[in-house]
Length: 470
Ligand code: GBH
Image 1 (spheres, rainbow, N blue to C red):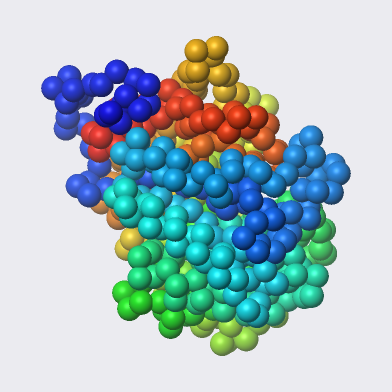
Image 2: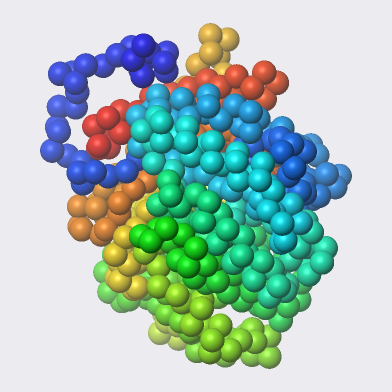
């Protein structure tokens, strides 16, 4: 059975392929795949000796998640990972980004590793490799062991950063014989700012500014400790980076002085995360603005935080339009038409394809990054499964095609993007939105756990097959 048949679609012979083969092509060897995260897909919450994470706790508190839904079962990928690898294979994917649940490995956050935990990921990795798919492993996609929240206040403490380093080194020691790319953390601002400032994500705290800044600092310190631990305990040649949805400043008009303003804006808006990681210091203006609330740190901390990386992963969803303004701090102002700016099914998901051009360009121009991955890009749509099992998600195809066209501009101009991971392989537990928002290119019926390829899966398969926007 051909892969298209597996998608329930007619085979398209290459002779009937794209008429304009020279347009919108990606570099030879460009890697195409999908991304997922442990708590969002695995389920098996009480199996294999897994400890509790802060998301188990949070999702079980009434009122925190849409309809009080939880990740207890999610996509049941813990039991169905072989089937899910076949979904990737049907697309022709060559890479897959998954995350490891820290509490499966260290149920108490630190101490004695749980062999059944690492064994699960080892089997996932073997299954991927047996199907010709290269695994890319994220070590932290928000499922912090509850034990660390209880003992230390989670990211409020440096102890959690140290524990993360130990955990990262341990996983690298076990998987780096087969996994060559590790991402330390996924999206600092999501698990810190939304978890510890807004309280809409686990652990649901609303810290005052000084404590919040210290938690941010502990998180980037954790990243740096993990980089070092992976280098120390991983097989020589193991490559390390992170996956960050940094704020992507898009110049509202692509001419000076807005271009320069967009670079300064990108540095300043990401000051406590990507900027300190890439530059080894917090921007002066940021420290001045934070005043007495600025984080406390040592020179040694900064050296750890800015440990050299092999690549940077960008999770790209929305643009932050900026215009130049001499009088504003940093020389820029962020602007948006609040009343009519279009967005996808998630209210925050503004449509801005050019974000996928500016992310690599800023990484290349501001920080001279030599290897870039798009570690997430995709969208939520109000998908409808037809009685005969189809999902005609033309809005998602529109979204992807336009973003990919802008990514193609970046590779055409020589920005070193090596691969793209679509978010997400299949519908899953969308954090505080529960199962109400679908990001997959496979539709999941959460009653039966049956997966159905959406029209966008067929689209993506052709993108991969042609190595081009189609
Ligand atoms: C990614 O975050 C995550 O890495 C992934 O796990 C997630 O499933 C995917 O996006 C889709 O959301 O509800 O108003 O508080 C993207 C960045 C940060 C965007 C958190 C949504 C919450 C907005 N996200 N933000 S709100």
